[in-house]
Length: 185
Image (cartoon, rainbow, N blue to C red):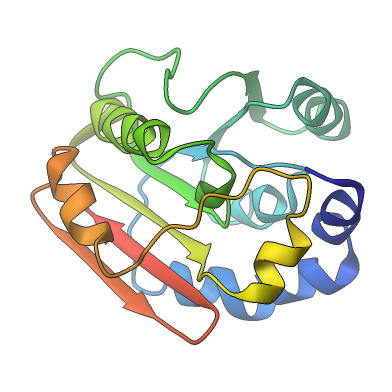
């Protein structure tokens, strides 16, 4: 992420947005179960909020410095932080009751890598498990914010088909002007 984006993702403004709007909308009526994987937590703002909701949380972060900082900050909490790639998860099949990711899919460097991440989320879910999350909708302002940064927008219109190709039997996407949420089983 570029410097501005790193600052924004650590800001109290972003934390309030996650706490008051994004996570409540994304997780409305979503039964995550007792063992949840968060893919791409970044600095961990959503992670902090998830820790209040689930008994066991594992976070997989691609960026080594972000993973180390999240681990150092949450060392005394029951959170396992793994530095790894969401498109090649280091876990056995079917071990999580829920998998989540929030506003990070557009940071995955290609649609092919995004699709591998979706297949991996499906692979590590228990039968009947739920994959849920959000991502930003494409805009000129968002593209500008990602200058010198990875930015591969996700089209919410074709996302249910992508989820089904990844092996999910059920996929739903809802949109708002700036974001979309998804659920898949």
